[in-house]
Image: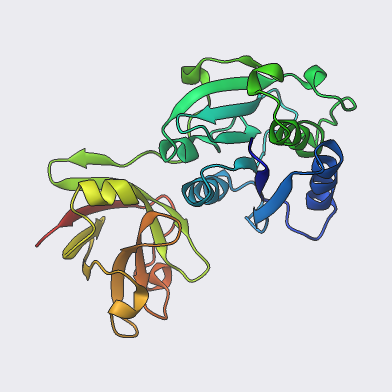
Length: 268
């Protein structure tokens, strides 16, 4: 049974939204433990929420991951429970926010559209499915209810597309989006730790091209492997291939934003 619920949202902490979701979960499943991964994601930023959720799944694969960045709430999109190939559970809206996390958890084994009538709570408020549908679903799953009991199966190929794409190979080059910039200005790319190792991008010197910008950067184990102010490539705590500046901001130095396309290859 999954007893930890990892909660990611764009709710912030200045309103009641996060607290109410906690309360709903506690009332429905007192033994569940809620871990707040991040709530200061920019409003409506599905890309950032997706990157955070994927990092959370990489670090806590056995938890239930409740992910809410939901610009389309109440507008007809489905509320989902996804069971991953490795047995993890994801709960969130069908807007693509859950999909990248599944890439790092054995893919999608089963997907269900939550049926509110299968949960014991009031009629959902159109603007707050997190409290009225998603949090209750995460709670009953934490208490051992099977996903199939609270939803109807949906075809995997019918799910909304993710906010960024998986990396791809073009000869010896890996093409990947910048999916996230952390608060220190490090650039995370859609290349997982496993993909980096399989493609030889976890050693030596890497060439990273962003349009006309070309950077040669050493791959390291940690930020301190280079002098202050120097660039380094590494797999950071999120499990993504990352371009960083020691004690500086790679985003500011190189003028890059999420959505930029990187072309990466090993040159030694």
